[in-house]
Image (cartoon, rainbow, N blue to C red):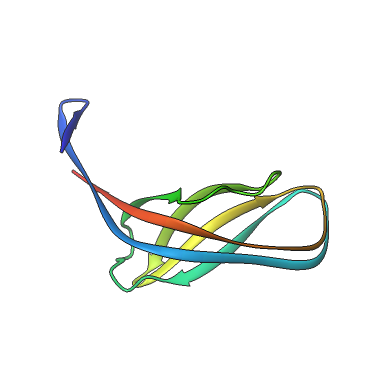
Length: 98
């Protein structure tokens, strides 16, 4: 637990997930929403997704959120041109509470 703006804040690792991105062809830089199951998530949880291994060059892990219990949505940004692109990345999901 730590203090943020005079408020006690706690961070708790609630699970690790693997997200996989695969495309035969993508033209134009874009964001993709990938969903994975994480039963301990509740809709509206404040969460952070932290990579556990290197993210491939040109890709970025963006926001992570939950609007349906047990379903994690992770935003992946990909480069302008992807041909036969595919990768899996392990993420640690952390719940932030006050």
